[in-house]
Image (cartoon, rainbow, N blue to C red; front, side, top):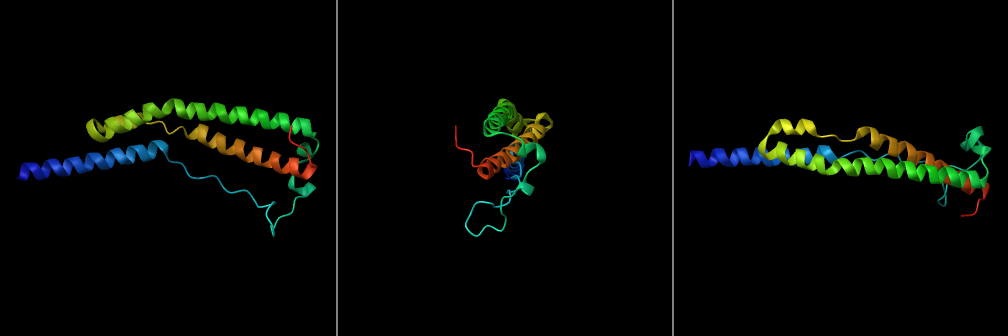
Length: 138
C-alpha cells in the first residue's frame, strides 16, 4: 500500500513537470496593444506627429513594399519557432516523465518571439501610415 502511494506521488510530480515543461516551451506574454486610432470615439487622432520624419517621406508604394518585407521577416521568425517546437515538446515530455535534466534542452525561442513583436509593431505603424496618407490597397 505504501509502495502504491509513493508511485502515485511520483506520478503526480512527473505529470506536473510535464505540464510545466510544455508551458515554458510555448508560453509568451502578449505584446502591448497599440493605441486606438480607428474606432468611434477614439481618444487618439492620427496626425503627422504620430509618425517619424522618415515614415512620412514614404510613398504608398514604398509603404506596401515595407509591409511585404515585414511580413516576410515575421514568417521567417515564425518558421524558426515552429522548427524548434517538436524538439521542445520532446524535451518537455522526457524531462517531465523520464529524465528531468532534459528540460534544460528546451529552447523557448525568446529572441524570435521578441523580434516578431517588434516587426508586428512596425507593421501596425505602417497600416496607420497608409490610413493617414489615404493609400489604396494594392
